Length: 105
Image (tube, rainbow, N blue to C red; front, side):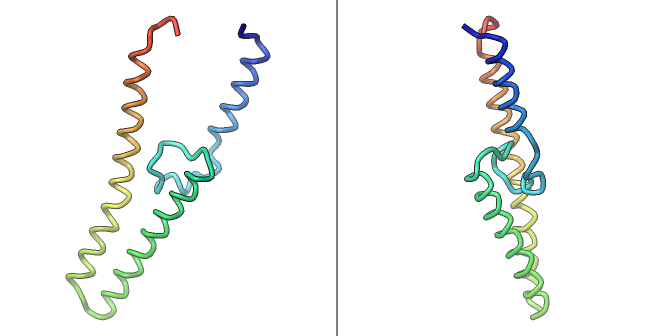
């Protein structure tokens, strides 16, 4: 049986999980929320890849490799865009699954 104390405990757990401790990394996270340490590591790896792309584009511009730099800049722009699209898809799937549940749940 669901008691008030259990509901309060679940709400407290949800609030702790939904805190924005990693707000800067959410840009590079493929998931809508960073909940676990693994999510944090994945978003850190994506952020590192983005940083490397920016550095490579600067190095390519320094050596006057304009086409290579343009390609790398395009990849750097596509990376956060694709991650944002994947987050939106996961949220849409989650909303769709929620709508399929019966109202009694």
